[in-house]
Image 1 (cartoon, helix red, strand yellow):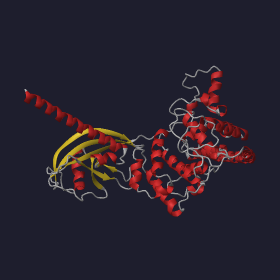
Image 2 (spheres, helix red, strand yellow):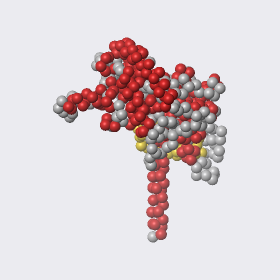
Image 3 (cartoon, helix red, strand yellow):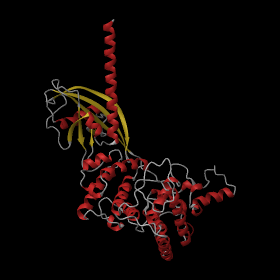
Image 4 (cartoon, one colour):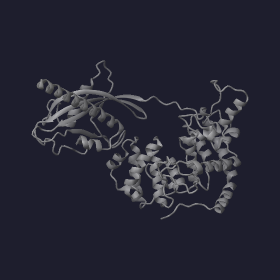
Length: 496
């Protein structure tokens, strides 16, 4: 196997000397880019005093950040650091990737973790990453998986389009690239689902290419280092952040440097809790922190609303409000025919379309309760009565042919949050009984299936569907308890 390259001190020195000679050119290019960009970025930025890193400052940031990272980096299953000086800790949950792991396999693992990490907490990613790489340790293994297998493995991570694109990307690598992952950003971005960020991450961490990675953590670090306000998602600011990151990235250890920047943003220069400025290895280069210290040294009151704070950078984006949506969900339970020696009920699941929200996943039948122009808003029951018969292959719920409707119960409502939708799911349980044995034999189709409670619990379901299933289980448990209580009462009365 091909082992990861670890530079010896002499080669590092020569590489850094060569890199240092390019710094004036990188600085000049950055200054030009900043000048072109700021007209669309933020009027608060001063090109000379704020945005640019001097050549010497860039060298210091690299050295200080990498020294900190080598001692304090987290141990995660998709990382490896041949320069690590970190001592093992008793609370370490994971092992790093092996240093002798082949470059191809390591690049594959970087790809998987980077896609999983988008909008997802590291602790949750580690759990899924471990299961994923145990089942599909190489890109070749993933390429022969089915979409349903991938969806089952991904269930609960959200943003399911990522799972579909991972499978499509693996199949592309297998068929078009003979199973070999490219290791340059340009070639990686030709693979379905791999954009500039993911391509740069794989190329730098897995392939040691000198390209910068810019995620939300890096943007936050840069904004505070350089006091960058303005809309960070504007084209001007995106270009500026990319140029600043390019100017900083270490040419000898680009992968470690990129991970160090992301680690700093995730663990020190934080957003959801006060940043730990005292533990920041590049604090002396941070202009936002410098502003705060100068204000304090001049007798400023940090409790005043106009006092400078590090967290004012970057500017908080104004998020569009989530669209509110009401959905009628019908959980269809089918009891076996009276002559069948089984107490196992079956439940109806339908498969979502292959594109769009939660593409290809299985769920209980549901219908969006669309607002109407009249005052007569259809009730949930009316919506279900209109949508469900088509799935059951009948004209109405009262005339289903091989099934008889025993009861329908309104259960509680469940709120589920997507990135852009707040969905309230109003759950109704409809219980049918087969009127003839084996009435459903051959009834399941590609987009409709009947499953047992055990099978349902083992399927890869979305978080929203799992919430609904918990409501159903709780209702059934309450009914059983009520029935048991009634039997106990009757037995006591009989004994008396």
